[in-house]
Amino acid sequence: MRWWLIWLWLAAMPLANAAGSAYPGDLVAWLNQVAAAAEKLNYTGTFVYQHGSTVEVSKVSHRVDNGVEMSKIDVLSGPPHAYVSVNDEVVCYIPDGDRVKVEKRHRHKFFPALLPVPASALAEQYTLKPLGHAKVAGHDCVGVMLVPKDEYRYGYILWADAATGLLMKAQPLDADSKPTGQFAFTQVSIGGAPREAFSSGFDDKKTVQVASEDTYGLTDWRVKQLPAGFAKVMEARRMLPGKKTPVVQLVYSDGLATVSLFIEPYANLVNPCAACPPAVC
Image (cartoon, rainbow, N blue to C red; front, top):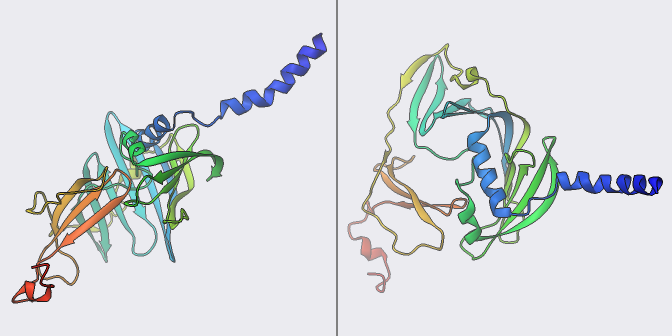
């Protein structure tokens, strides 16, 4: 009898170990954990953004200290520049010779903080499918595929650290559910982010404050009918390269997919409707 009990105990060990790293049963709750982890955990790491032939490498540092959220993105590919944010304030540092241009920017999401908090509303527009476990940057990760329920958005594959929920890899998909690019950590340390990591890194240069020509706030434009789940998240008048007058930009998102609508006047046309078919005018 003793040997029989020992055999049962040994046979059960792999099952017990597997249960410890089992796929989370509630995928909506798991997405909420993934979304919150990027904003609440302390971490530092290096990630790669790849789309087509474009490859960019950046370093990220994130820290929450007494309720204050701090993050920094150091762009390592191309001309060096950095984004430093404290709560909702974002400042961009752009070195220019012996100077560094400092410009306030509008708050937007950086990897790995790509999901809305909470993320549960995504389940209304996407079907969630488990993908099991895989290794990303040496971490055991849990995968979830978000399959769109309509033709107004594309799908995504998300891989997050199984222990903490931190997003480790994100792949947007095309209409055939094939990856079109990715954000992915190549190295990450979870649990540590020293305060000194959040300095601009350009203290040896003269600081020049640059006023943005963009103005954020209400415009006179409205979209009456939107696809399910989409809402306006930003509107602004922006100066774009090659334009003599500001262009209106409206940004809509379902929390994951984002669409920008740009509007500009027919400045060079005496009669704009002359270029339109009769049915339009």
